[in-house]
Length: 113
Length: 113
Image (cartoon, rainbow over all chains, first blue to last red; front, side, top):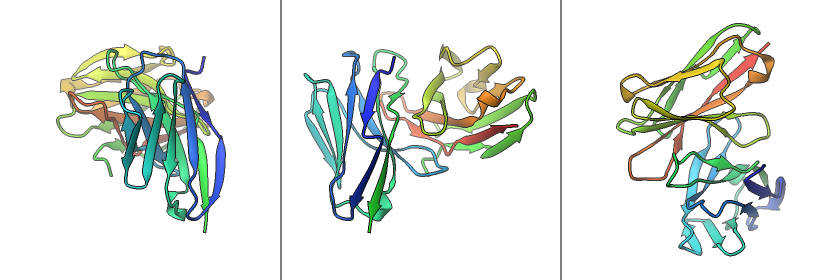
């Protein structure tokens, strides 16, 4: 049973475009939702995270939108650059548990110059 | 560089051999996680330490796997009698007390021939 579903699997945009990556979760006990960026051969790097009491959070060119009733959240990358080409993972965890992250399957983003 | 280091970065072994990986978390982070990531997938939780206590183990962690965190500092993950299905990236993450953020190391890429 996949608890965090991520789409699309891959995404190609032109430089300056706004790629949007979506995630849906099933467990309403989740209360922490981070996004990670991973380059080939590297470990995941934390980009931005949100808690369910907030509907939107922005950090630099990265924005998370959160819809608690729909159990969905998304990552928007403004003014995307070729250097943003990477795989992006959404994740979720429960603070009341041990806090282990449950990841989506990832979205491979390619930003064309 | 998140400050989490892992050693070795790459390991090639023959089926049936034992391997051991090391993780050095960020100093004073009392929580440490191990994840496994196979090609094209998100990281999957293996086990969790709070200080030196191993508090949770995933069903993915078969009896061939063992992890330790002596004195609550670095951690080791050992795989005995390796199988080809163990080939994956093994990731370590550390987390400070009172915060949700997990910071990943660069991973150890294991190839079992």
